[in-house]
Amino acid sequence: MTIRVVVQGALGKVGREVVNALCQEPETDIVGATELNVTTDSLVLPDGSGNVPFSSDLALLIDDVKPDVLVDFTIASAAISAARIAAEKGVNLVIGTTGLSADNLDKIDRLARANNIGAVVAPNFALGAVLMMHLAKIAAPYLDHVEIIELHHDKKVDAPSGTSLLTAREMAKARGKPFVQPPPLKNATESRGETTEGVAIHSVRLPGLLAHQEVIFGTAGQTLRIRHDQISREAFMPGVILAIKEVVQRKGLTIGLAALMGLEETS
Image (cartoon, rainbow, N blue to C red; front, side, top):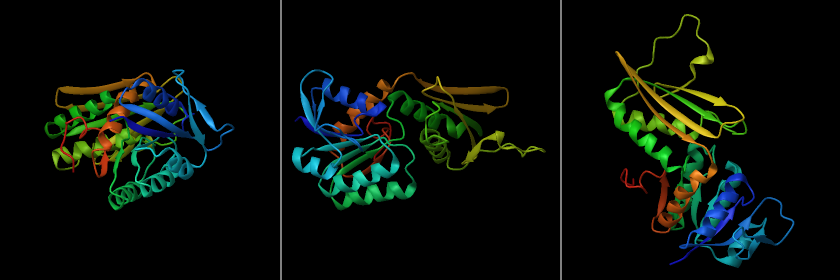
């Protein structure tokens, strides 16, 4: 079965990569695209295979092209609005938008279950980043002290990153308790980072970076470093394609790619 896909935010930096990846994948077919503002009613596909309908009205586009999956890499407010429209029309969701709150995730889960569709929301679609988090979870029960340094490009809208927050929460879950925080400094400053589950997270935002994260464990006489470096947005595409293929077989919300990769059971 060829999976029919609409891409929301098709002219964004990640959106363009998604469109290109869908054109290269034999089991997917891009059938439409959206942007907030469009000046033409068709989008030329990068592989030269033709055009697809291009619109700022997602509801009308879905009615016209009848996709199986909506892929969204936009902003949180747009993603939630699109999720409601698509879910109510029976379209499965793959969302990589950053900055979604716990309430946003609950709403997506309710929409998915109410409309009998699948939804995959992941803070990071790079398979190497998922493996980095998985390895950190394995180490977490054995080492009591850990900090995270996450480094991203200067246009990233959120800090700490969704990946770093998820890493901290999943590590704490794996050990069954928060990590041990160092004692407060006499002259404490915000330079110690934002703390989640006893993990200090340090955010760096600079031009020249894309997406990087290092998890540093420390204990007496030794440290353990687990690091992932992403050097292009192309790194997201195998994970996006995996999510598209998996979401049509699932119901309700799946957070992250670990379950899709067989690294953990689906909740």
